[in-house]
Image (cartoon, rainbow, N blue to C red; front, side, top):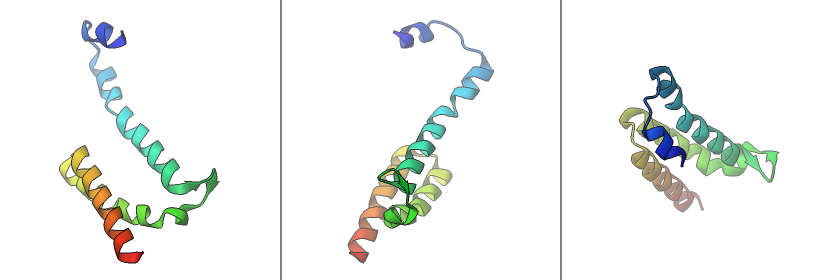
Length: 86
């Protein structure tokens, strides 16, 4: 329903600019929660492989601006780190 309503009106440029930050903010909140907290407690080292995998994932996301590329690099990085160190 909201999609039908929003598709028929012209939104102001400042609002569209503001909306462009929503996915980044949501992704940052989800990543922070899943990487830094374990069972509701702050425990950054509980997910050490995932924390290390952030580095190449962030670089791919920053350089290529590709969500699919970042997801693939993140998954491959975590898999390789677990395979090497476990």
